[in-house]
Length: 329
Image (cartoon, rainbow, N blue to C red):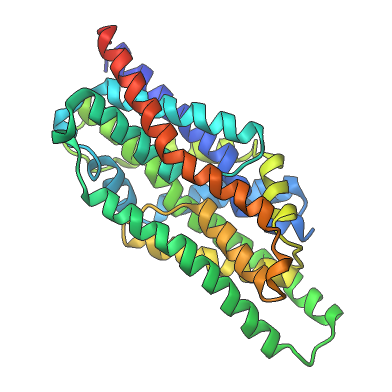
């Protein structure tokens, strides 16, 4: 294992750490905003469940990321380095202004841009993008509709109950739904960087295939969990407080809907955006009261960040990979 490979692996872990910092709030924003858990307890819970989710749910998503967007044999370590740095740059910028973005889209766009820079269009693959588009539909449609339908079902089931009784019950149930969404977050987001890490090992000649070793799962899962402990309060504020008003029952519905969508996608090998799924579920839950209950101005800012992610990260990956090539790295 040479110095160049070690440096690339460190960059991938740095991106994974940033993933833990900025995506952890997506999983715990609702449980914090409803005051069922304090921020510190929610972060500690998410840290553990992120690691567990990454460890026990297989590596189907990692395989999609590692070999579904560029031909592994046709690129070099400079492409992986460019992708990792692009993720770190865009994550840092959006986190500073409190906007949640999709690590899925950051990774695939930057890796595609880097692959295009070093090998041209011949190295690009469409199979991964097909799954990303499927994940896009699942996150937005299933998240929104699932949150809406679960909330409507709860309203019907508890229409004769008092508000205090409902709040007491769902303050307890939301602990379970928060655990569920944190676990599902680890099952999908943790795997994405495992795929990139294993790709770097393959390019460096350390492993002979893109099967993810157990020690890679442990390192990447642990790094994400460590990053989660430094989760960003600004993003929690955007998602948990600014999108719509949430009570424990609303948080339970949003977390249950998003957790189900994310976990199903993990088993199907579909990289899905936790950010988009949770946001969509929160909006679906808010829309059950009335459409105006959702603060659509905040939603537009989030959607703008989502839309910018593809071209910005793709361009960053392309420029950085070209630069590394010119410098002979």
